[in-house]
Length: 193
Image: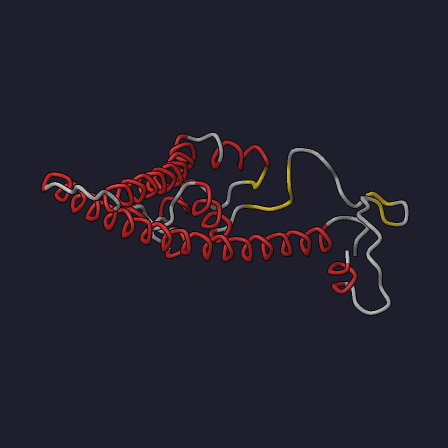
């Protein structure tokens, strides 16, 4: 609430949302929003919901790698709830994108489990007084596997860092988008001039 009050300036207080101003309805509900999809909006939605993020050979929507497709199928479409749902949540490409993200998290969790098991086994073998050549060989194999898992874990941490940075960029772009929608509403809807 303090952030909203600061946004409205000194002496002003945000008192809530209203669809009416001085008895005139300025916001109409319903399925449709007053905006067409532009290239920036399509890039944001494709990056976040279709995994067009530049990883694993996929195109990077923010670099313009899939602009031809976005312009052909998305730019100029009415930006409605139905459009967003059908193209970015229930479409096959969206399901595939969610699967990719879930696979990354599953792999991370699996690597953490493998690392914990390898560390436990290394400790057990290191503490045995009767270390035979077979056990020594197994210990070296486990140490190498442990090093491989640690390296993969570092790769995943770097990828998670990139994803977090991109999420912040997406958030900033989304905030800009909603600011523009608000400006459009205040400029073109009756009773708000």
